[in-house]
Length: 128
Ligand SMILES: [Zn+2]
Image 1 (cartoon, rainbow, N blue to C red):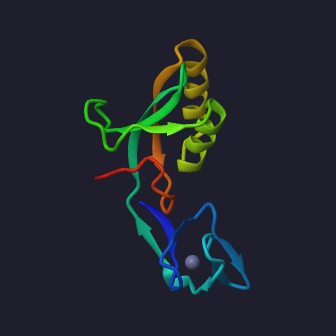
Image 2: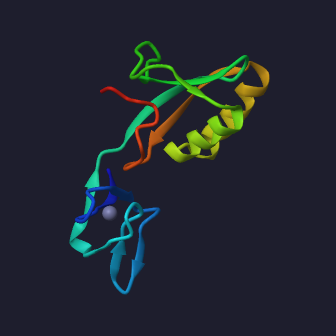
């Protein structure tokens, strides 16, 4: 469980790492609206694997933690650099990014485990 701001104006979620205090009030990362402290709640985070290919056309696909069930379609990505930024955006930590760099360089594909950051766009098109 992690604390998030559940914005009363737009309904967007902002994780604790990104919301800002302005005069004791919290600012939504999505719309900039100020919210009272009472709009902070705890949400369950989710871990997934991201299966990626960087050799000969980049793409990503969300996989379950056993790596045997896709959680969404294969999504094309422009370049390995964009793919890395995508992983960072979704919540990949430094360890996951190191694993990405290593697999990308040596195999042109791989899997990295990430804890999905709450309130991000569903760029992996998770269907469940
Ligand atoms: Zn908002």
